Image 1 (cartoon, rainbow, N blue to C red):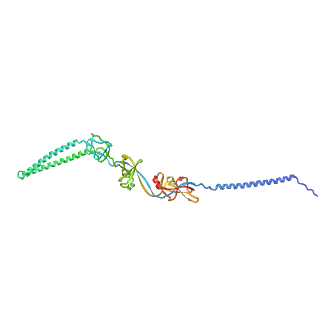
Image 2: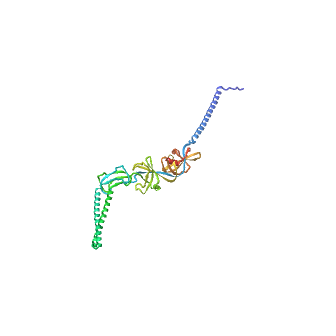
Length: 397
């Protein structure tokens, strides 16, 4: 009978250690594999989140609702100056020596007032000489009439010849002709005496005095300058189109700095100024205390331009491609309001607004504040909406 040999305790412990090592190794490897698989999932989720676009916040914008207009008014400004309705330089028609002058610069004179006078002593002597000649001729003529009367009586009785009667009659006719010549000379002297006095042709102000008594004057040499004191006029050149639209008697306003003076159209000259290509207007100014002659003023006229378009604030405009202008509008998108760009042309610009036309339509919402901050396709939200008040803007302008 065989005898069993028992195992040694060392071998058993070695086998158990190997088994434990294998188990631990498999456990560690499984845990590492699980960590690797889990990490790859986390990294994939993070990559997916990074690649997914995030929705940008909607930018708030200020808009206005477009209202179509049939035209716009343009204020034209034209510069002119005050002048006297009548202004003349007075001088004597005949040469002579200035004897008297009764006015000085700045004096206001009434119509027909004596202003100045020439030395008329030679004319007075000539007139006295003609008067004496006329008296002598009248005496000779009276003698001829009496002689003719006596000769006619003698002729009736046959004591006088026809030749003597003819001689007396012709002598009387010659004397009467010489008397008429002297009378004409006296009239000429009276005219020259009248022209030796300068009288005011109308109520005026003496604007200049160029000569003093004692000076010898040539014919027509100016002595005084007169300007009509009342009813001053405002002379201004305007464009022919605006002049054609005005009528005589139409009331306008002229500005002298901050002062506004009422005026009435008194004359529209028919020709064009060759330098400015404008038509001249003469306006009669109303008022008691008006600016001095020569004061520069401004006439404002409103011209209506018939053309369809829209009023926009200057802040709504932005530079576009190729030198054009753009406005940003708000339209409906799939997810809400979005920005769109429209091209416009500026027809008229003022300090804070412009009249434009382009690819716009009434009712559109136009971005009025900071259009450069948005781009076409951008999602926005409208803060407030204001309707264009054209009439109010025009009154404020």
